[in-house]
Length: 423
Ligand code: EPU
Image: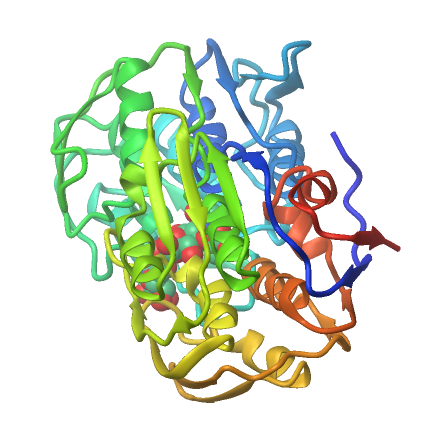
């Protein structure tokens, strides 16, 4: 596992000429949920294609602190075994490192009848409540209390399946409640479930472990509880957000990239919008090819739950629109504080104004290198993309945020033709 160090800095030479082929890594958000699912069984869970990113490291540390074994095998796969779980109380300092960590609650509660955790950490991209998670646990019979900074969920006699309405189709909320429900007595219906591809993949993995989940991919999940789950071997899907980030890199620089393994069949919204900017995209069994063209046309978009344009691609797409010809309007419909990247892009010369959850971008404006910060993982991707297109050299501080979500970043950037130095 790599060491997690805050800070770090990139020095990026602008006007990059992007080309070549990049393999898309395993999806962060699928990997993190799948790691939590390993808590549901005594048997080995082996996950292939888990990215080497610090969010995986911090969740692995959290699982170990609960008594689970987590190790990288020689072939790179991650083996998890939760037969030795000794505590269902997540240490606060580890929970606060990433948002996904709260997803240990559902599996622990479902299997052991008890779970305790502080609210999760993660990016500062808005209020990130967990009411949907907690009310799902309560609907299944758990008693949830707030003890100091921790939420404690108790169901000593086990959970009982029921009808759970999600007040918002929360991704991790759906996953958390679903992981609790697979071991509940009886039948659970989750209404207004998230349909993100990572949620669907988690459903398939749980079914491979013996769970009975149907309605996968719909907003209504039906779950028949069973007594125990077995181990499994699963492959983490390629990361649609990483693929989207590199697709935008090709377009913003007027270059081209082949993105091996890009999961284009779950990226319709992005491909639709990129084509509207004038990009040429071809898809095939091995991945997708993206070619940018000049001028880039302005397009407006809304960031939405799946299958809408992913909120995690909002900031990267916002960076692209600074180079588009005309006025683009952006509406963020998922998080209430996704606009952190705007101030950083403005330092580079972008004309963007944001108000509330909307932004207006006027382009094209020449971007120039300066000193900016990666304020969260995707805001960091936005300044990185802008730096590739800018004139001169950009210094990006706090790139530890990028390391949370982008595997082998330095190597990949150099392979695609970006001159970058890590300091
Ligand atoms: N929400 C509620 N109540 C809840 C939970 C969420 O109102 O109990 C609201 C939030 O306030 C927010 C919206 O629901 O406005 C979406 O939040 P959601 O719970 O769906 O997001 P998440 O599960 O915390 C995951 C990803 C995010 C991604 C979102 C949306 C993981 C670990 N994280 O977060 O990924 O942006 O879904 O797709 O799966 C990233 O990778 O950079 C990242 C932030």
